[in-house]
Length: 383
Image (tube, rainbow, N blue to C red):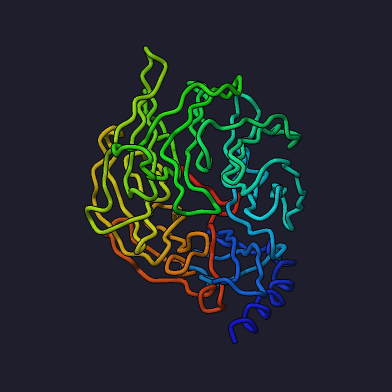
């Protein structure tokens, strides 16, 4: 029944796609989906989902773009102009670059030789470059942001690079050392600091209080928008903790310290950080058992935990409603059993409570790997 539903949805999407550009949807999201669990026959794709509860199509799949079943698509990242989307692959040494300026999207495949398990992409507007972390081959690939030509490969001094964030104002990039994709028990513990203008590795820093090998698995790093001097939040996945990197202008380096511990409130697997438009709130997802956490970051150097809302197993990426009052949390972490629920949780950020769940993909035997607003939707929030 589930496989029949999924195939039917793809067939229906063909007729919907032709009228998609004329639809006046208030808030449409892109999701990457795949067959839930480890099955011999699997499917992958990009789906368009309506998130505006005020329109008749709320919660419905508007259109779908099939993807190769062995791509193992993972993340989508927009360039700063939001006219291209970069889709990373865990299964192939390639980036898929989508021209999203008009629908239907045109796609080109960019080979990235030497990149195994492509994870995250970050952009430097100052350098006109993009940077792709390759967790399986422990390198960062540098590409031309205009032509998408691969320019350079930077070997990492710490293995398993995953998260990456760029701050052009101080000409610095942070890269996390996460986990061996072939052995989940082999985890990193470091942040690597790179100078984007030169591609030079400047330093490596241990992100753990415990003796090495600490296995904390720092997974993502994000600069807090507008913070001066710059501040970045780092999520230690296995440790279940936030670490803070503070820029020291006189020394031109970062200091690092541990901060909030999710294990103290019964949560684990800290993953993503999102910021509201006003810059006074941060939202952090944890995948086990699956929560969204709100922090007051009026002082970005001293985040204060406000509340935790239960989402579902694998709580991972999210998008905001236009007014910032709701969050839509995608629940799946690389299709890991127990952390691949497949639903989208709807959360009231003002009241701090769950409003409901979109189970369309879950009911079809699918799970969702990421969620993004379509590029034409105004998005005043930062990731």
